[in-house]
Image (tube, rainbow, N blue to C red; front, side, top):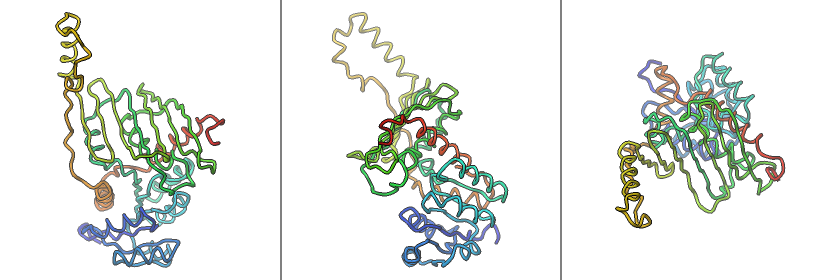
Length: 339
């Protein structure tokens, strides 16, 4: 295979997320979709038939044909499957979370290095164009507030909301702060049962002094996925779902606020309650590229496989997110946390 040849790619796991990967790979000219595998032969056949590819009968047969794979199985199987692929030198894009615990994440990091096979973790919000626009600002956050709530989807009920949903925001927050996690406080509630939390609120303090409040719930009556960032230079508001973001910069706005305060104190503005504070602040929308996050994620993965370029979301990143998630779950008080 030359550098101009399409990369032979396969997908392991044909559930909801796996089928999205199959569909996206099938449309990429730089990829040759060699096939799919699932523990359910019927699921593999259905996905293969829909996208005109092959359903492999065994994982060994798939490994013999592919140079890169997406691992989109249930999290409990990520480590075992990725080891077999990495041992064969196959690049892996492993859906989030990287593995079910820190120990397995560390194993995947070690296998990637030992077998010289790259691993990218499917933290898709990193490829959300609004997130990328905010990260490009290179702000130094002092406080971050993230909220991710939605009605119950009845999927992934074997894991708690921290590993299921909050993990997205943990990865983004860790990337934005760029600092080790120093302290964790958290509270959570299990409503459905099964020993895992369905609602969680955590307060994360980082070594550089930044504080992040992160909330996740899969029992809300509406869907909301937002992040707000405060720094000395600016305030940023981001909507993950709408893929929009806005910024209020310190420059200009601070002078306007101080001038208004001076006018109030001087009696020039007799009734401050009549002021429209929103109109006083200059909020700019950030320019957002109209990119599909999944398409961008897979294109980045394939480009790294083809050229040897550094992986954007590394196995170490996936390990850090799972480590933060475990620390949050451990920090929940026993009484009421998993009732």
